[in-house]
Image 1 (cartoon, rainbow, N blue to C red):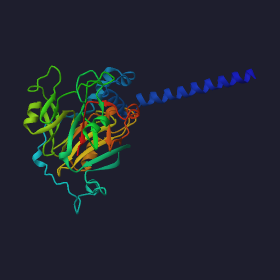
Image 2 (image 1 turned 135 degrees about the vertical axis):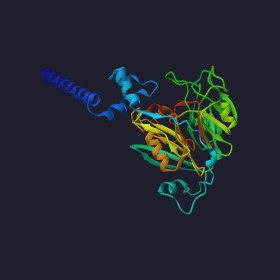
Image 3 (image 1 turned 60 degrees about the vertical axis):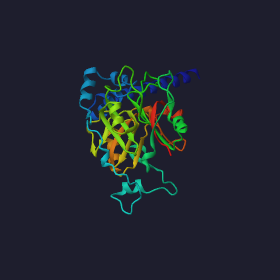
Image 4 (image 1 turned 90 degrees about the vertical axis):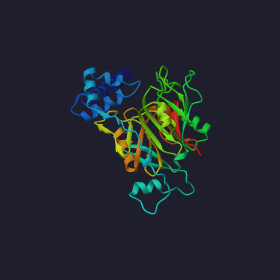
Length: 345
């Protein structure tokens, strides 16, 4: 009996080592084989996270990583949105340009405020929210900034603002756990309520995602907070890149940010606002920037901007988490963030 037990243990160990060897061989071929797409996707995704760059560095040298990153990039849009092009008329139509416009503009029975469209973006599940009254889209934010907390969940902020549909917005200083310190300007009700420490609101410049009083998405390239307010921005925050400006898409070479859970805000020429949430279970699952641009263009986006993704990805509809963010955030109904956008009736 003892011999049989020893044989079984030896057999289990042998099988385990064989499995580990096979995994190591597969990993070696993936990382060093001829599949540039897989290698580039792995490196760009890892290097564009805050805490997981080591995943690329354990396999590749700094020189190799730099070469891969230099071959995958986007050309930043330096043009600001011309809101005069937006003529708000969000009523249902009798005829449509294509099936995407029909799907977006056809209301759900009894709901003239918004519509949630479940779809696929690449291989990822996604949720596109059409908002029919753009004047009801407002910035939401934590009660206070830089008081030593970790911000608030979108669900909490949305409830406090009386929101029906809410998404997360801009970035924040993140040392692993997050913080309540926004990255870039925060503008609320025509006032700058946050400027990065050490910066001046009249000289510090960044790309500002804003909304005007008349419900127009105002993308301000390389702008000061003061300039944004003077241009009509009521609410605003900093993030990017801008994906579509005045109907023109960002130029993307390769896959600079890899695949990840992503968020975006957009507006059609007729004024219909769109919140886009793309699911992802981890840092190599989700959608690319090009995927986001492509799906927004299908639904007629004229101006659009990327929002904070990854663990921060949160879409709340009627008090419930609508999207499926990475596992850590999903367990807690979303990560703590500092800003977002909401449909506030």
